[in-house]
Length: 244
Figure 1 (spheres, rainbow, N blue to C red):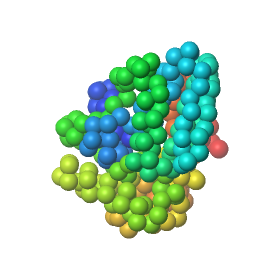
Figure 2: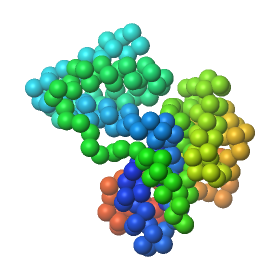
Figure 3: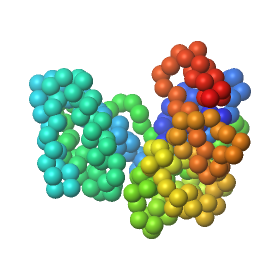
Figure 4: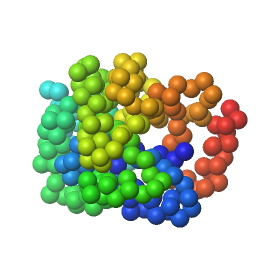
């Protein structure tokens, strides 16, 4: 089974034509708010701002939850490390607070950083086109892609049920499958699983790296994350998972 998380436009522009040509069905787990608002995913915006910062910009100071943090931008490697650390710090924030931090970073760097041209989310019309393909299934991935284990019960339910309702209304069909944002074991908990079950989903995927065993719960199915590998590298990893 092939799956894509988040709801990027290249799922329609690149993945669907290839998958259709070779007869491979796939599922796209879509985050509701970026699609509805036409905004970049926040982690792509962060990467564009920080990794794209010029060498002459030596430091970046960011205020997060009342604490000023300084990041070195003196080299490409340091900019990548700064981006990864900022990603970790921004993940648990609520949307408005994360937006405030990103605006602050942009105000400091935007005159030197080119606008992002890749990595945009699907539009509503594009998602409808993708969903109309015979071998494509659309699943939910919350509304705002927050770490479910860090949320209150009310916030968690709003993310899980809200995305199911939003996509169902947009596509005029049932949305039966779910993918946990970030998806590691620490990113969702028992309460998250119970909320997914209560919302009426039939199954849910994590990003826990394993093959699906016969006794696996369908509410937290593991997956193998695919990076920019050659085909033989991917096949080797799949063989290892299956024979572990």
